[in-house]
Length: 158
Ligand code: FES
Image 1 (tube, protein in one colour):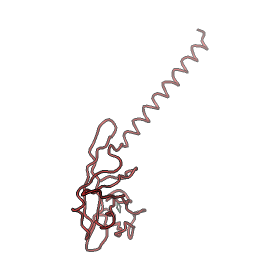
Image 2 (cartoon, rainbow, N blue to C red; image 1 turned 90 degrees about the vertical axis):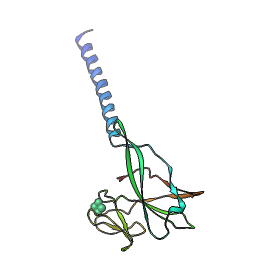
Image 3 (cartoon, rainbow, N blue to C red; image 1 turned 90 degrees about the horizontal axis):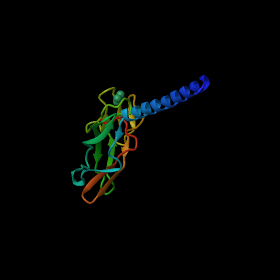
Image 4 (tube, rainbow, N blue to C red; image 1 turned 180 degrees about the vertical axis):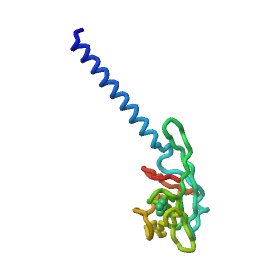
């Protein structure tokens, strides 16, 4: 092999190695942001435990994969019985910076403790910096059990 041939071979090896390293870095970054293990409809509990008078707070524990390890990630939801319709449920994550909101019976608002964001019972922003409404979850009652449909993209599960 002459010099040019050797140089071309070395360049080809470096390009191949660079592509492999890039792929590994991309895979690591993708995993580092986490992949939910639970998908689709999940059973939350008994329908008879839901209240028609107020939003009940439920903390679910979901399995998640972060980088090279599995982790349990809490997800807070608020649910109200709307019989005979399906229950109404919201993800409890504030759309501003991801703090967990709380339902206040006195004000009839979801209030965020971090920067004063407030949402009404429809999940709409009524005060403060949140840029978007609360994420509403699809719900279903099957038999005696209550289910929610996990959102495809889960922002700030807390
Ligand atoms: S995180 Fe809720 S208002 Fe800022």
